[in-house]
Length: 108
Image (cartoon, rainbow, N blue to C red):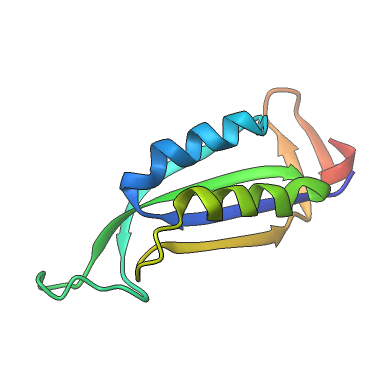
């Protein structure tokens, strides 16, 4: 089985809604970290321009990656600058720590 990694950077106030929508489509695992940075939107009222955001990382079957990305996009959309981005990245290899299995993403 081929795997993909979906990475999204979204507004923190949209995080809860995105999480709920991902649960509804039965996403089995998600990692969320809080971060700061700037891109399309910068906070010019701070000395470093940084804005806080949430970063989501999801590993899923390649066949589900577009559905996951579209779900995030729909749930996080406001139509304003700074809504964020979603990227789908190929996964070359996976190492499962619990079982010590390793190999191509489809082998683990």
